[in-house]
Image 1 (cartoon, rainbow, N blue to C red):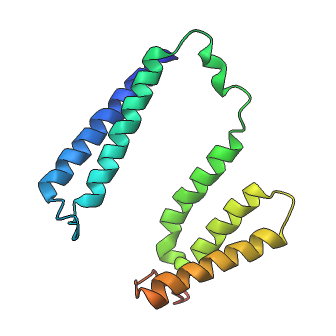
Image 2 (cartoon, rainbow, N blue to C red):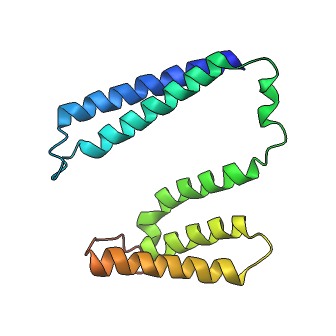
Length: 150
């Protein structure tokens, strides 16, 4: 298990370096006025640091560490990641309000599996608060979807 982790760590490190260098070419801007390359630069640095940590941890890993993932609840990882991927693809056709509500409801439902009202109310509150902050207050245009909401 050590060798694949080292390879993945190297890939993330190289990808992070590549993104950071590409962002430098775009331009970081100034501290008080960040340019278009500022966020990609931070993402590249974050990926590079994550890859470096994985590489060092995989190299220093001792025997018997392969069982670290046994007994984990993979459903708690796969469902949120799948929900986020679906959210990306459904944002335009469904709009911000509907797609964000379903995403938040699913994420709250994962954390409180036996309840229904609490995730429903919490997701509605989060989506409405986000809508008020971004659309009303900050005047950010959000995807309207097929219903024209947002």
